[in-house]
Length: 541
Image (cartoon, rainbow, N blue to C red):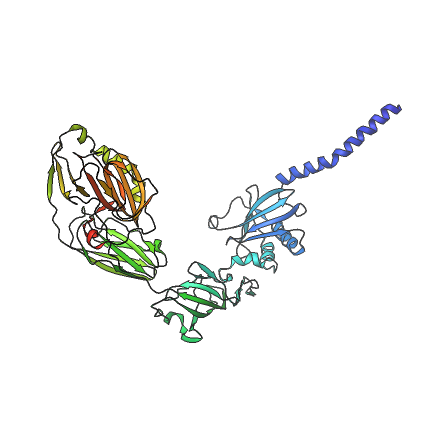
């Protein structure tokens, strides 16, 4: 062999030697993808138990490495059974993810507290029955106890929920009995020696995940005990204003045949007791087409207030905070069937209260208006009314959370009224019938339309049926509408005061001449303005 050939052969062997580790690594990688997990290749393991608790194990940790070995060893002597028994196929299972060479293999373990009835599904979908001795080794393993305790219904320390807060005990003990009839003491119960502060109702409602067999409560005010005894005899604290109390709870759970676990705990917290909610009607009687104000005191969440009416008023009021009070405007539509009264039921927290609103008799007159022009008649049709509602749906449904209105409302024009609120109208040209939902004024050219009260301008625009229109939101859903204008003096976003000029009257939209249509609404329900000129919005304060 010549020196040249020998040198080339040596170079080729060196290149091959360099690639051997790579080929070995690739082979191991492919093997890890396709083969069952092996202890020597697994570097880490993630376990999610049947309660949703997650555990991460790493082979670098000696104790965790032993547990990884125990889990992997469940495959030794396991028998391939083809499919899971029907009675456990839908049961919760342990989801175990093994990490080998960066590849994750997912196994499902159907474990129980009975060593003879355990299965696993491997990463290829194969189903195996676990050897009973291997299962017993896992279940009895002290290092596996935090993971296997989920197999026992009585092994979980109860939780206490007060309102939206989870309260930890200051001290606690708990034990459960395992399959070998051995008592296992929990050593990882979360406790907190700090005294928590909880917002509660006057009955101090407690929500345990497992109801104690014995629950004693001590309530103190500035060091003086005002109640000490069984919780179920506490009832409601007599509070007329918000108050704070020191509370000590002593809870005990006895182990039973059905619940193989028990223990005790002490909880100490400050209970901030909210005075019960109470509601008032601004007026006890109104006429059809008017609205009434409901005021609530001690309402801690206005969005949670529930409302119903008998008979129904086809309206759900929205409550707003006005300082420390909750306020809602409730319209009684002129389109509702006749009723002598309505019974309102309101619920806030623990309080349910009923109030009766009496409806006074009122007769609405009829009127025929002379409109024969086809151009004018075309401005009020089913199509233009639908267009108006669609275009202004956001204006109708939205509401300023600030109360701008204050004191008496004024008329939008200082002239005479041509057509009043609620009149039954018939149009001469096409015999269309409808309710007049506002007030029409007799005006002169160049007259101003005036803001009925303070508010925020939320719309300025042209609509086929209403012409040039301005809408002012006075707060809490109460809006005033100014229609048929020839020009506007304000723009959306402006803040106006009572009596400010909104615009100049005109003849735009559906009208048979120069005029001003002014109306009020509560979330789109037309309401009568007359009483507001005399008394303003009547609210209980």
